[in-house]
Every structure is written in C-alpha cells, then in structure tokens.
Length: 194
Length: 194
DNA sequence: AAAGTATGTAACCAAAAGGTAACAACCAAA
DNA sequence: TTTGGTTGTTACCTTTTGGTTACATACTTT
Image (cartoon, rainbow over all chains, first blue to last red; front, side):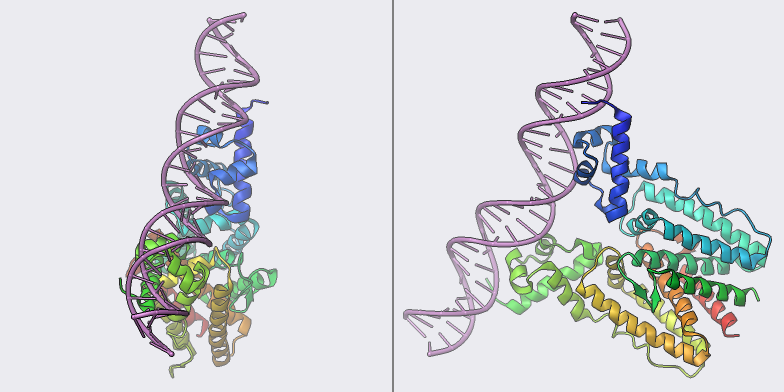
C-alpha cells in the first residue's frame, strides 16, 4: 500500500475530468468517481468534502477564461476585430468538449461556482462590447445585442452538436457547417460596418 | 373507489406537465409522477408502458410546432417578414416554459421522440429559409446561417434565463432585455436588406 | 346473479446513489 | 520504540428510483 495524498487527489481530479468529458458534469457522482479513479469513496469526502466542492476545485484549477486574451486589439479596424473575436469564440468551443459540458451544466444547475464563472464571462463580454462600441461609434446596447446573438447561438449550436448533426440545414458536426456560419457572421459585419 | 381509466390517464399526463414546468423533463420519473398525480405506479406502467413512452405521449398531444404557422407571408417585403418571423420566435419561447425545458432536454438526451421533433423543426426552418432566400435573392446558405444565429441565440438565452438574469449586460428576465435584442435583430435586417 | 375482465391498491424487491463508522497500515516525530 | 496523526480499506447504512407480484374492488356482459 502506497500512501500519497497528492497523488490520489490528482487521480480523483483526473477521473472527474474523464467523466465530464464523456457524460458531462451531471454525471459526476461519488460512485462514478470511485469507479473511474480507483480511489476509495471515503477519501473523496475526506479530501474534498463533497462533490460540489470537488467540482469547484476542478473548475478552479482549469481557469477557462484566462486562456483567451480578448483585450488585444488588432490594427485592421473594427470590422476585422469583431470578426476575429467571434471566430475565436467558435474555435474555443470547438476545441473544448469540457467547456461545452460546462455551458450545458449551467442550464440546469445553480451554485456559487457557476455564478463566479458567469461573473468572469460578464466582465470579458463587457470589455469586448465597450471596445467595439467605442471603435465603431455604435450604441452599446446594440453592440451587446449583436454580440449576444453570436455568442449565444454558437454556444447553443455547439451544445446541440453533441446530440444532433443538423440545424437549419447546417452541418454542426462538420467544419463545413461552421464555415458557413462564420461566413454568415462576416457577411453581417460587412453590412453593418459598411 | 372510482374506476375511470381515462381520468387517471389525464391525471398522469397533468402530473407530467406539472413536473416538467417546474423541474424539466429530466425530473419526470415514476416516483415523481406517482407522488404528484396520486396515481399508483403500476398504472403508469400499465397504461403507458414506460416513462419514455409516457413522455412521448405527452409531447405528441402537445404539438409544439403546429401552433405557429410560419408559412404565411406578409405583404411588406422581406425585411419585415424576417423581422416578424423572429419576433414570433422570441414570443413563442417567452410564453412557453415547457418549450424551454424541451430545448434543454434535447441537449442531454437522445431518443426517437426528440428526433421526430427535430425533423419537424428542420422542416419549418427550411421553409422559412427558402422563403427568405427567394424573396431576397440571397444565397440559401447565408440565410441559413443568419437564421441560425438568431434562433440559436434566442433558444440559448431563454434557457439560460431560467437560472441567470444577465448576459452581456442584457436583462434576459425582463422585457427590456428582449426588446434590445429585438432592436438588434431589426437593426441587422435593416442593414442587410438596405 | 355469475363470470370474466378492467381497474386500482399494497406490499415487496433489486439496483444504484449518497454517506459514515471502525479498523488497519503507514509515516514521522518524541 | 512508542506515540500520534495521516492515509487507505472494509463493511455497513439509508434513501431514492425503477420495476413487479399478488390481491382486491369495481364494471359489464351473458
């Protein structure tokens, strides 16, 4: 018998990640974690207190938002800035199954961890909105609306894509579908910032 | 003891609706239904076979999509047609907590019932896209993209609003938030169909 | 009225999930 | 080396959920 608390904590967190990737946050329970990690139930409670707490720790160590630094402003003007931002948003959700699961979890659950995430998202969102609003001279409310249209639908379509292949004839599980969506976004900004 | 199969079936379906309204499709289980309806477990199995089947029956009798007839085309041209369509979509989701729950359920589950609903949604969506595409002369793919941006985000934001009040500074639990979103949509169409 | 069928009830069972108590093994410091 | 705390294991408990069996009560048809 080897004794190593740090290692077992890592085992537990690794199991959590594995479960989330496969079945989402909803599936993270004591029994599932013990089964996947091979670590005894009791230790989960001992080291993390509760599943909620465990998930909080997991999310905390991930730092979803700091990965993308949206504050950098390119030189090519508002139009390209806006396009670039939302292309990045698409790529972010494309590359992260866990983020997709997190978004889904948010729709059924409410707890301090989630509220904290929302605060961070809100901050970043506002930064972008202010930047675009200033650069374009457009009303902030309007920018917020357009912005929400894009990020909202991208979030939704990526969540949906885990169980469904087509939405409005777009193939949301293939690059082709996402490319036409990007083209739609670009078209829109071309018209708006004409 | 009164014996009346039809009545108990109605009691069961009513309980299902109540549960969905409050906690969503995920919460519809045998025990929950018996508790809410007061009807014995056994009868659920006897009359509906399984919970899946019960939900299928419930959804079937609701006929979510036929409520709104999107095929009618107003005389004021594409721009107003497009605006009107999506305003309707917003109002539909606003007025129907059950529809919001259905959309959420779709993100975690997959079964024949859901697939059938998707087919219907797809059909209606394509009708709209074809209509707008023809009227405007725009590429179908482009129309599909823009269309998906709007319906996708509206779906997402309404789902989110059940657990969260703000998104990108929009108050998604108040009319004010949805009005600025509508204004954003209108602005977009004004630019696109300029 | 008797028989047969449809409806309803009570009690029970198994599996899965969350949770804890009690003990065994290990390590480190006195 | 003994003592005390940390780490790990076993075994158990409770609750919830899905599902069934056996029986009682009502209705209907002949």
